[in-house]
Image (cartoon, rainbow, N blue to C red):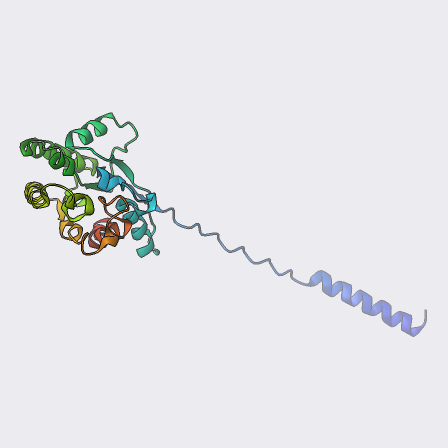
Length: 246
């Protein structure tokens, strides 16, 4: 064995010994996986008639749907998710029709985070006695509070819009009488709403802009357009967000 071979052998043995004595470096612990919080679902029930179901506008333009969407967009950093609203409403419904529909509904939740009520224009249009409206509106308001788990702050009532300020209303024999009767109905529902400690939104003045601003009336010449519904939502949104703590 020449000296180079001997030197290589010694070097190999030295490296092998060093490798055996070297302390192994432990692998780093994996970073813990933090799951995103599961959103708290906000459930919303909208009770009403053609103004709530959004006659002559698209689904997205209905004011309850706009309200739910606006709450989601305005508060993106919260862990709340506002579901698409459950809507119990049809064109032409009176207070009696709405009561019957609620009684027949079998898909409603037992409790909602928000409940809205807008009803009465068809009672006026069909010349129903206002005393019947008084009785049935009270019953509907109490049911709305019940659906909100008894929390009156989570119930909102909207005034009846004035359809006298539409092309359809102007074609009637007495638009002034329509407005007068709408005011009577709203005086009643406003007073009763206040007596229950429920928040009331007077959107009737907005509805009376329909002749001056034709874009606020839907293509049927009678019902609100999506643009008018957006004005209603603008009045309601901040209150609802505060109540829901979004």
